[in-house]
Figure 1 (cartoon, rainbow, N blue to C red):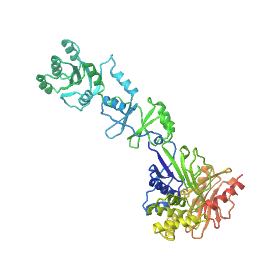
Figure 2 (spheres, rainbow, N blue to C red):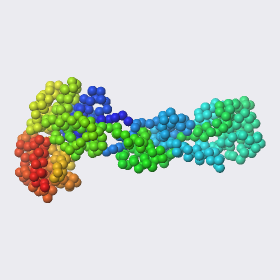
Figure 3 (cartoon, rainbow, N blue to C red):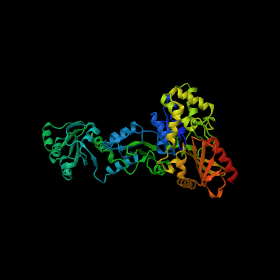
Figure 4 (cartoon, rainbow, N blue to C red):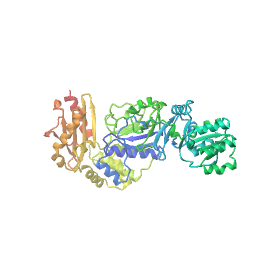
Length: 550
């Protein structure tokens, strides 16, 4: 399949992460790299949703994980064949497309079975067993097209019927006795230039008379054949070739292996590997959720590189990345956070600068590469910068952020102060939202030698409602801490109006003193003048963990 490059932020994406992905993917597409797709690793926040809706920009595709899946390794779409196609046409198609298998589908494209040479050989041997009468499932229409026969008379030509094949090779009287021993209503007789045999077959009411060698039906017998409902075809081949080809006139559905069940494009490699090893042809059909065939996956496909790659924005630590990203090539990283222990197989483009927002870096990539920024993209980039710098008031804000914000403001004709008020209002409304939703909307995991901890953040214009719901939030944080076996799980509540914060934290009792901030009340710490998680809080917490977490 064609290569796809996902431009994706961290697994609990904030506005800066989602906007960076959308804007960078747009830049790549503008430069002619159509394989780049904006993606997100989690649910968007109310603020992010507000921004994308307001400026009518499509929200990046949701990618819950990047665990190795069938769709990332399958080589592409494949040819299919309708279940009512003749086996002869199906085998010819397999030769044309140079494929050892052919999925058989119904009229709507739904998977029915898999035609492969093992199944074909076994079925033919069963049909041509000399100890049994040759019996085939076919129709007059299938016989005609397989033989390239000239139709003289056709009756119910599309109806399938199961028939024995009788070759009129014996002397007339002997043949008549053989014919009389068969049930004639579904019998196919092959005969050369023998009018007496033709007449007896027609009088007996057989299903079809196939005249071989290109000979034709005597005109005097035509009316009788029509009256008796006998179909008459003229085969251009000799009798032995005609007999063989009639076997191939069977619908491919009769030869398909229905025991081979399809796999879904979303199935993990762990699930399909044992199924591949059990498949006679070492391959499996791949279907979508509607059972429509999307392609074929072969064992050899798993030896190749996946058909996806990634560009990471707004993070560079695997603990924060969408699950499974380490299985694929990372092309680029665009970030403004501390460096984590991530390694790559190949040299990559790595842009990491101490600015307030990744959106600042992405906006300046447009400028550096002399690509004009559309108004809608410029609008969401400005929002991303303002959201991640607390409307340019955070300690992480740099002159580069301010200059870039002014540049984008001029492009969009948006007032920074007014837009900032709108963004804070969209972010701070927690009415009707569960504690779990608020905590996980922008949660990041940090790993130190002493252990792991998580810190979420929300900006509000007043922390009153959160304080009232303190017990609910602390209970949810404790469940999060236990699930990760973390030292602590915390929520940084930043008061935009006063540029102060409170830290709600559930701490492992064995490390009760690990957080060394003024305790406002049980589980709630007061952080004066701390508004940035990245630049202010995490460095302090990391130091406290190293000091008290041993």
